[in-house]
Length: 244
Image 1 (cartoon, rainbow, N blue to C red):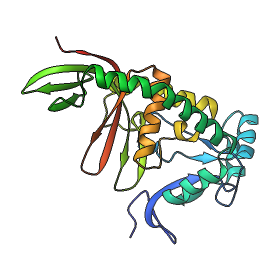
Image 2 (cartoon, rainbow, N blue to C red; image 1 turned 45 degrees about the vertical axis):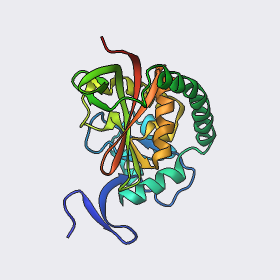
Image 3 (cartoon, one colour; image 1 turned 90 degrees about the vertical axis):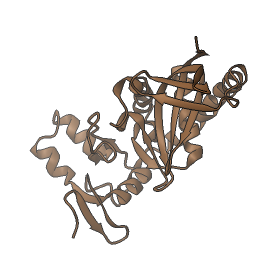
């Protein structure tokens, strides 16, 4: 028996229920528009529709009876949703994303090396991050040595092999993810799936790449990765200094 908000998919078994227009499940290259409400529980899988439905919605001035009838919302499991999104998202954005990642890595690499060597980050015995202060602290024998102001970028789950942006993760306080919303805004403006969408299939390398993009767009000094039992948490360091 499926729980509320879940469906049984023939291909993927029990999964979260999502809602898309009738054109997306079997479509390819039809465009992908999504209704994202900040911090909503469904941000990972917002209702979605194609270019044709968007034209009708725009002409009608919003979702009225005629626009909804034309869209004919259907239920998909979350895995089918991710597949439909990938197939229908504008293909030209793939190259633009790759170029942005390349540019971001070129920006980050020398800065990462500089901050690592200058503050001897590999030599400190312990690190701790604190959401309330928005700081990452490297210490030795209980004495702080280096302090960095941080913004959480997102996390890679090694259990589900997925990426989740910090702006869609309410376990992070707003103060330590607010700047990353600028990365999302850039993704929305340029229709870049990996930046505009909260949740997608990913590996650890994707976490480094998205963190590099965030560092580039936010002009950060470096990136840090914090491992957990079944995930990696990524953050950008916006200001690094010796502890007073």
